Image (tube, rainbow, N blue to C red; front, side):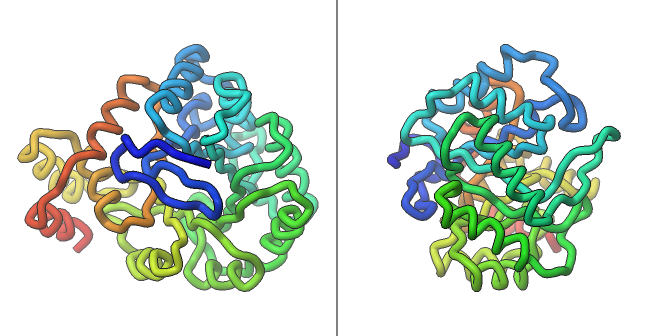
Length: 289
């Protein structure tokens, strides 16, 4: 695969696939609480097409979003897919009638979810499947072995190209890597939540990508105010600063900010290209402390 180099951050190699470090997360395209169809179906299709037209070659989704809504929108908007496009999905959770995210990590659950992703995305092989652990509150202790061995078997059967892990501890990352190679780790991480600093640096040394979610999630009011102050001084938005800081934090960080708006998509792309000085970074680093 090849990828555009016009987006902020350039590119990164996920196994044998080269993707733009600035990607797109499709979760927000589903309805409220990530359940049901979008309020603006045509707008959702438009933003997906705009992302690819802008040069983005990494889209993140999950069969649990909707459920299946974002996958079906991606298929409608982009299939047949450009050769340069990598679509990453996640398994490990289902949706219930109340909108919850019950764990679904038994081998039979994972095999079913992989088949559902293949069908709803309209492909014969999934580019990248992340094994999601933990819960909505974050990472949780526990073994990833049985679940990840199941995905490794599906990879050997030719249904999955690349494997990754999501919402995991450093110990679970190591456990997964003893079973099969991974190309990425997808965890919550941002300016205010720096718990994975050591993991990011270790993964960079091994040429494994780190994909943070919630770039502005979990900030306290004080931290939000500090970020807004920096953004105002630079004449930009807090999101722009947060995205630019992530790209500058480490070359193996890939971004997947989501939006329902084409205009906001382009704002995010432009914002991520902001160049932060060493002084800016020093001020921003204090937010976590």
